[in-house]
Length: 156
Image (cartoon, rainbow, N blue to C red):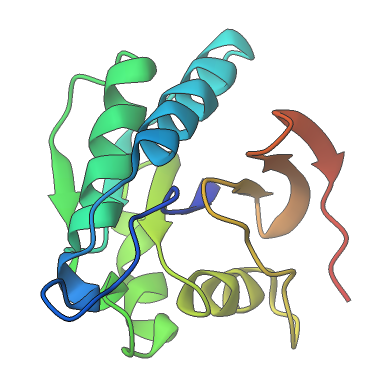
């Protein structure tokens, strides 16, 4: 199984009239989400399923990623990917979703999920819009959203 862990892209700041749960992607965040999806598609990556946190910024990232990669399936909102929930809940749901699954979430939950999937105590933190590939339980690479470069994924 290939799991693409993705942190939602850049979002607008929280403020008095916009609580954290309702933050949406900024213009830069939308641009980055599209560019990351286009890079993944250009490198031959595709998905059997796209799962996302129900929060707005993650859902928007998932939809833009789906569009950029020509994914035609349903983008599924998974409550267990919401911030504050134990990442093990989401990990238990991945195997039934296919061979190549994109998972869009938040820090620190998305890196904690990575640690569970590679069975190690820690996992590198994600910058907004970054992608990490775990293939067969092994960390492979991280796509840096700022540069669109692939780097080896080193996990302690």
